Amino acid sequence: MSYNGSGTFQINTSGQPVVAGTVISSTAFNALTADLATGLSTAITKDGQTTTTARIPFAAGINSSLTTDSTSSSTGSIITSGGVGIAKALYVGTTANIAGTTNLAGLTASSAVATDASKNLVSVTNTGTGNNVLATSPTLVTPILGTPASGSLVNCTDINYTGFKNRIINGAMVIDQRNAGAASANTINGYFLDRWNVTQSTTGKVIAQQNAGSVTPPAGFSNYLGVTSQSAYSVTSTDFFLIFQPIEGFNTADFAWGTASASTVTLSFWVRSSLTGNFGAAIKNSAANRSYPFSYTISSANTWEQKSVTIAGDTTGTWIGATNGIGLYVLFSLGSGSTRLGTANVWAAANYDAPTGSTSVVGTNGATFYITGVQLEKGSTATSFDYRPYGTELALCQRYLPCFNFSAANGSLGSGFASATTSALINCVFPVQVRTPATGILVTGSFNAYTVAGGNSGNFTSIALAAGQSAYSGALNCTGGTGLLAAQGTFLLSPAGNSQIQFTGCEL
Image: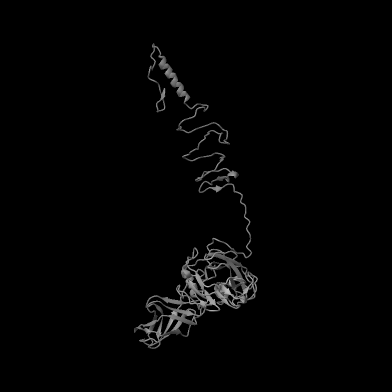
């Protein structure tokens, strides 16, 4: 009595059907009863003793009169040891008890999830349209927030800060308008890379260069300022060899130094030296009669190391406020005499460059000192370096050094008029407003003039500042030319090759 695959059982044909008046074959009868027993044994029984061997399709669903709620995986109308797949919507009339992790891909407008604190669930219903809303509000624990003493956020990281966080200009040593990466002479005693001054009380002891030694800068930087000692020099009591930057008062006035509200600041930088030990640096006021010397340790020779120091603002002394004068100095000592060394990490009414016992770079012939990533910021934590766009950094530098560089002929520097056949008065407009009008110029190359009516003239033999300097432009008196037409409009043009005009005196 085999199953024919179409929903009915098929009776064996051997000896079937039984004809009246004939002898029933025992073989056929026994086969029939065996098939009946097999069919009944493999059918789903009322008491559920038989286990199905394949999925059972239902045309009209399942209905049960069992009213007992399911409180575990072994009670309820339907019990399965496997998962339950539901192709369409699921409706739960009362509580849904979920013992394990619940993944809800999306709750529909009629969804509801029972409260279960152990599963971090709350009762959710719906207003009938739109998204689900909380029917029972969860308990929220109010976080305890400290109140900032100043009423503002301090020492916060990963915030898109758009202000002037780093008060150091050209801290990544990118801008070098004066030298374009060339090395200095050992007589250097003044500004080198933009905004950075390399000074020595006894000349001939150091040379400086952007990217000196061609070592790989620390990650995130492309340039550094490098200084190399030219002798094994023993400093005298009053000697000083320094790298420093004066910061304009407008850029540090909010520090409020010299008052009871003085802000704490943090100085951070990357440094590398062929020497190891304790090195010295300091912050000073404009009069150099208040100073804070501090030390930092270079542990490994010829290895970039990042350093930071937090400095409580000075509450006494005289500090320049919101003016275009010097607000403060940040300096790094390459070697200083005993009269310029003091106690570390305290404000002093003295002109100190570094703490007593600091390493002298100039004391070792050939010693190197490289620095980059210099940042001075408010707060007691060193944050990530404030990378500014190149154009922004260049403009900040041009406030202190309006410099015109040319690499080809006939670059126009400015315009004016010919005052005679051999001279012209030219006005050069600065890229930005400078700190203070220029007081001098440095000229590299032989510039010439072009008059509107007469064409090119010969090169000028002298270019000097004229009267009428301003913070917006520089006036030049160009003499020694030829072929000019008096009173004609005139342009000042660059010669072939590299040429440059620096307007000096705008620096601090």
